[in-house]
Image 1 (cartoon, rainbow, N blue to C red):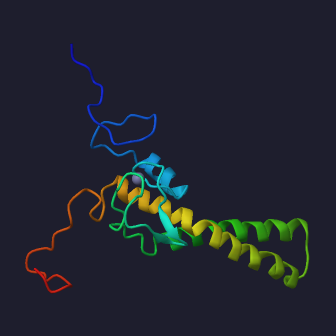
Image 2 (image 1 turned 45 degrees about the horizontal axis):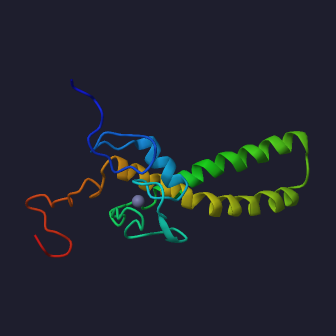
Image 3 (image 1 turned 180 degrees about the vertical axis):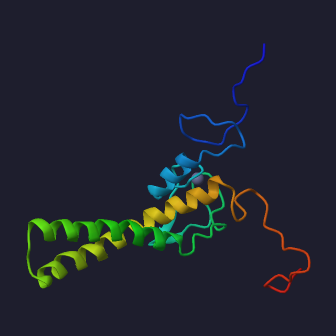
Length: 154
Ligand SMILES: [Zn+2]
């Protein structure tokens, strides 16, 4: 009798995923909660916006990620919609002076930016891990032939 049960998993949750497959939604959720996208139990960040080199729980290498500016762009889009929409709706039903709006929406923008950028970065790292970008697939990206490596090595 043949079974379709996975032969090997390295997930530490009750969800079983066949060996080699990575659940993108689950990895992004784990990253959103600032935990390792591979196991969900280790910390993803050692300090504010600084990711760990390796997961302390499962040993997954995290230095491969290249989140770069994407978390900041996503944070701007998200907070821009919340703050601008909130300002416009508030201004319709509660007309107050511009100074009061400035006193409300400016600190809220700063607080929301600081509160959301790290979880968004975690989700981006989870996405990169799940899609095996930038060395998360187990192989370092190789330089194209004819293009010199930035470190001088070929
Ligand atoms: Zn882990």
